[in-house]
Amino acid sequence: EVDAGIGGEVGAVLGANLASLGTQHQVLVVTHLAQVAAHADAQVVVEKLSSATSTRTVVRRADGEDRAREVARMLSGAAAADTALEHARALLSAAGGSV
Image 1 (tube, rainbow, N blue to C red):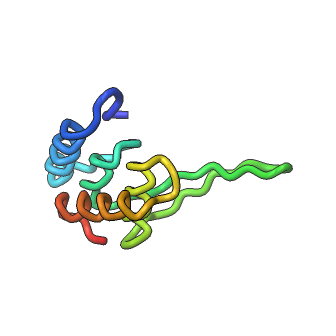
Image 2 (cartoon, rainbow, N blue to C red):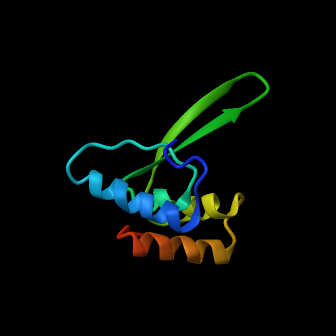
């Protein structure tokens, strides 16, 4: 994880730098930091699903409002509250992402 031990404004700067690097190179980043994720051209979510009899991993692309909800979850750590969702939309907009 490129964002280990950082957050906030430094995370936003890192996200912008990675986005800039991505204009010339392919960049794949694993992050738990919303400020970094907001700068991505594409965002995928990796989820572990467990039942009594099995465990599986699901990978899905987050687009549009689903992406805003995922960034909000990254911000708040749980199901996205309205304020986290507004903040996520603002982060995506500021980073040039679409909601």
